[in-house]
Amino acid sequence: SGAAWAYLASYAVAGLLGTVYLIGRTPLFNRGSGVNLKTRELFAFSLPLVFSGIISSVYQDIDTLLIGYFAISTDVGVYDVVYSLSKLLLVGLQAVGFIFMPVLSELHSEGDETGMRRLYQIVTKWLFSGTLPLFLVVALFPTMTIKVTFGPEYLQAANVLSILAVAFFTHAVLGPNNHVLTSIGKTRTILYDSIAAAILNLALNLILIPRYGFIGAAVATAGSYVLLNTLYSYQ
Image 1 (cartoon, rainbow, N blue to C red):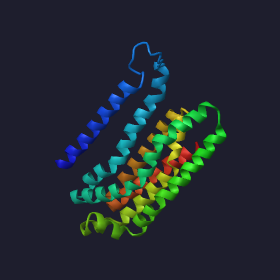
Image 2: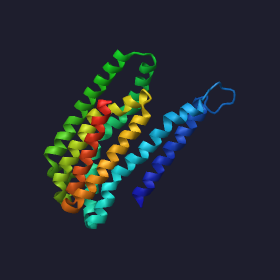
Image 3: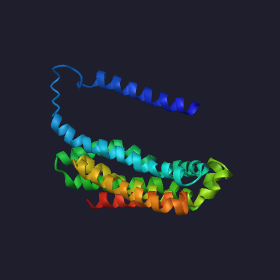
Image 4: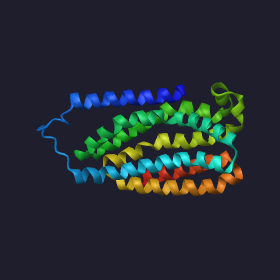
């Protein structure tokens, strides 16, 4: 209950501060401010991102739900622990994305493709350098990582942690590709890619979880992220 209240409070405070900033520091809600929002263009750009975000949430959680359906309840807890550990590899990507995308979008509006390419290379190098040490620890020493963080009761999922670490490390290093597509307005492409990854994730989970338990779920997650990033990078 304490963790749940902390989760609620953090979002409430952040949302309140963000709203106060928008009202006090931007002309968005001022009448006669001259801010011109083209509704049709705004929806054409934003709606695919809304649906792709929903789909991403589904395929990120569907493996946990299917483990609960096909396996035993304790497997859900074990898998959730190693999933949370492996997702720490995405902290750098999520932080950089807030800075990277608007700068890239500005360069794109100016037609500066050389600057865009250079910025992408720099960000990717920093993400690789910053994420690699944590990845090596988690992937090569999963038993130690689980013992230190959650205790020996979860050691049965050590192999799962290594698989998920590879998946999220790949996503972290190639992750700016999603922000590039967003900054140049290819939001429908992101939606189609998310649908493809979700279908693959669901299919692999249905095939692998009944046979291999949470190891099958980890392989399904890894496969979906490999497909997603292959599509993003190619496009």
